[in-house]
Length: 469
Ligand code: NAD
Image (tube, rainbow, N blue to C red; front, side, top):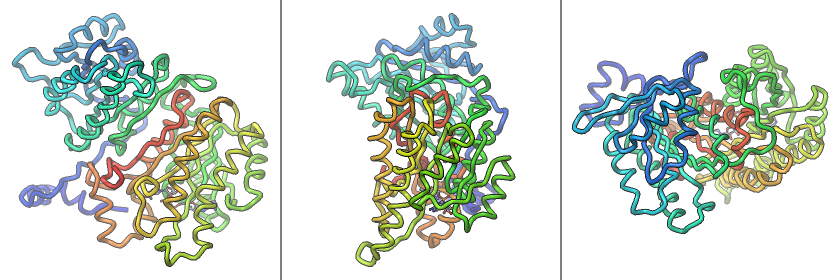
């Protein structure tokens, strides 16, 4: 749906009026276009204590042909970057202002005590005003639960307060993320850093991502712009909205897509399938025989590499007014069905080692919502399913993650009354709703064969919505 306020605020007359009235001015977000480099602009590197990931970062930035700059408190970056053949320089010498950059990346893995946190202060204090529009801030730490001393765990946990605050402060479409990397999982960072550095993560901010040692086979794609080449992907609820965008983005990345939706949605479904050269499968996933039918459909094409559980319904009523069948329907379609399908696919081997299961939760499942007890139960349940199944499926080499969208511009949100819709759109750090493609890009990152170290994550695609923050 068109966001009239965003267009007005960015017109010459509207911009003046909005500034004069002191109203928020949403920045049109840069989104990924095929063929673009991962990052368009320089990356400024900082670090504190004895940073442990500088070689990994140098290798990564070399692989995406980025230009990097060293903050003056991390002079060793220049020689490390040079060893890796990476174009680099110093960002600013004392007293001089440095150039504007597209990303700030801070290696915080070396911080082992809260008294060292002033390294964060100096880096972000110096650089916060030197960001290009839609810049990226990435802080990399160690998972507090894996730290060997309480002091280190404490300072590593404190990083979350920094990135969540930066996400609110930086404006102009900037995002800020915290990535916790387990020791020994450094080589698994590529797919996550590519996603976070690029415009693919336009509407993802203030998230905490955990990258662990690889689960199942690891394979970096031959072509990162075709990361899903040859992969067989099933997307439920694909006839419209977010599901159609997921099917399209997956196909853009080289996947063979089976687009599934209810028989009543067949015309939209066939249109999507035709557009992407995929297959339409009309089926109600809530039916008792759906798991077996999906196993058969997957086996008929030699197995399924990725399933995206996007289909979902709402049947909103306050609990006092809600009939039992509305509760049952929502919990069945949005949650129990997914559990049954996952179990059937995993147990039958229809989804094999290296398989990816990606679920769609909602911020309603994190924050709760008036009139949505049934929906919030189902979506919070999806989070529970991801977290509890991740270690079980890991034993079979399969990852499971979820996205939790906030306000996304779809037919579902277009139907919300105007005042509530405007509140949903504006109450986030981007001052605008997300697009279906934003959810789809995050799902592609989870689905990538290079994301073997990414499991058990629930990532909000909500522009840092204040709801449930
Ligand atoms: P939508 O209603 O436009 O699309 C959902 C699709 O799922 C529809 O095509 C529908 O026919 C299909 N579906 C429903 N029940 C099914 C069943 N039993 N079998 C097969 N297909 C079925 O919704 P959307 O806005 O595109 O949302 C997609 C997902 O994202 C949902 O899970 C939703 O809960 C979630 N979500 C959306 C938003 C948002 O702002 N739009 C926010 C948070 C979460």
